Image (cartoon, rainbow, N blue to C red; front, side, top):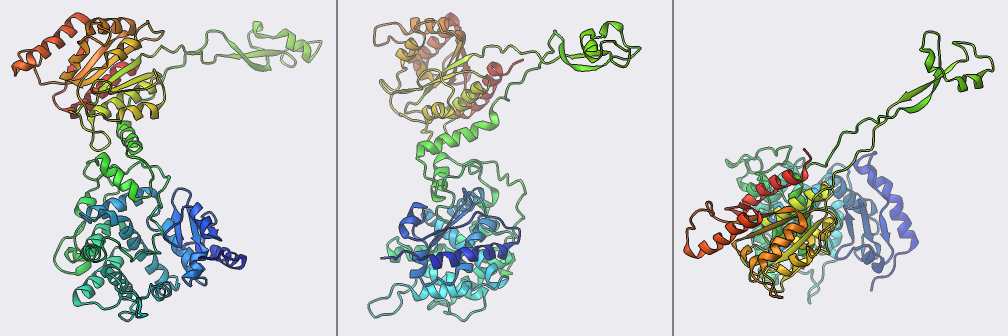
Amino acid sequence: MKKDADSTLIDAWQAAWPQALAVWSKFTRLRDPSLCASHVEASKQGLSGSFAMIRLLDQSVVVDLPLVTELGLDDYALEVLAHEIGHHILAPGNASDQFRLLARMRRALPTLEQHAPMVANLYTDLFINDRLQRQANLRMADIYRKLQQGREPTLDGQAKASGGVWTLYMRIYENLWQLEKGELGGGQADERLDTDAWLGARLIRVYANDWMLAAGRFATLLLPYLVEDTNALGGSLDPSRYLQDTRDAARGCQTYGAQQIEDEEEDGAIHPVHDKRISGLDGEEPQAEAPTRAGSGQLREPFELGDILKASGINLSDHEIAIRYYRERALPHLVAFPSRPAPESQEPQMEGLEAWEIGDPLEEIDWLQSVMQSPRPVPGVTTMRRVVGREPARAIDAVPVDLDMYVDSSGSMPNPQAHTSFLTLAGAVIALSALRAGAKVQVTLWSGKNEVMQTPGFVRDEDMILGVLTEFFGGGTCFPIHCLRKTFAARRERPAHILMISDDGITTMFDDDELGNSGWDVSAKALAQGGAGGTMALNLERGWDGVASHKWLQQTYETLKRARREQGWDIHAVERYEDLLDFARAFSRRHYVKS
């Protein structure tokens, strides 16, 4: 059982903090570390599985001092604190780069993506420790010696054998710092491992100033050893037992920017032996990373984003991640915030007084103010006049059109929490654009009978709207006529436009409802009570309003043509769901941009 740390140890580590900051730069500024006197206190700070950690959210360092004592590292305050500061200063530095790093690691670890956080931690530690050992002359090698001494013994009293990952990792340090083989506990190694350790050390030196570029190469180097260790240890890996200080580093951070797939992420998962800069052999010559980090323009699927965020310590459900995903994807397509000219008021407004001088119009004299200056006005000396101006008049806002949107979530549609749903994305673009224009939005997600989810009326809450849009049913197809009927049971004070996003299954809205009312009558009344028209964006074949390509579609198309002819529905055929994004942009500009 770990004992609480005494005040002497806490004071000693606190005193080492300024010196640890100065190791990186005399201008380095971070908040004071959280030096936890008990394991319970460390757990409350979110620290587990390691004796120290960083938080990128508030640029904090947390240390479990009782565990530090157990590992025999009481005298290494400067080294440990300087190392944790290095994660804030050098690698990963911020949440965005942590997401990018894990994405590259995962790409290079097929079938073993769950180990990406551990590999990323080991990788960034190499750059930080090499700089501290060689340039700052800190005792980083001694820490690994201490950790090796504390490894769990076997029945014969010898140190427990290390797996291939840990052996390779220690041998890389031995190469970097020109130590004897096995000095840091690398154990027995064959020619293959020695060669890989040399390549790993070369990688750290070659990419010391561009560590992100080589992330995939390092993960590829470790991959065979991960496979062997996973098979030998049943999926449980030991090498970073106390060294997972970046495991939850991004917890609580914003997730913007994690959707983009970068070129180097896809192309960088090569073995270091094929990188000419590392091996010296003929091979790929890596290109410098573009400053814009624009990548190939591809975006991740929602489930891929979720895997990266969870690996970074972001504790969100799939639904919460989907809300962030579609909000970020929608942002570039939203209409601009509305602006309006401010006309001048027709009534002059008094701004102050100034002296009336000879030559100014006589009628501008303010005799009251002049007499107050002197009972006997002296022209040009005691005479005063008013200064008037005009100020912007109060603009009268036009009433924006509210939006009543119905989005199909039947089995023919993709699950927006797993794969990109352009129905959800189009709905997000239109709904958020409407909110920008000052409108209120009601969203109804529907599938089969009784499979309906709806916002609590017309709202202006983004999370509430996106929360409905990103849910999924995946059942049959039966339009919720009762929702349309109840919404427009009476005429609304504000006009509302009705928008349907679906496919040919939308024609179920013209069936009879549960009360026996005709769907045609419900639809007609809704359009009349809404007072702002209705639109359908439907996944239909081109030329649907001509002759149907299949006989079974003829009746469906005749129903839609009747809806357009008799009720005035504006029907947009979208051949590919991807084209819904273009429709969403055009619809938003047409309805929510003031001319």
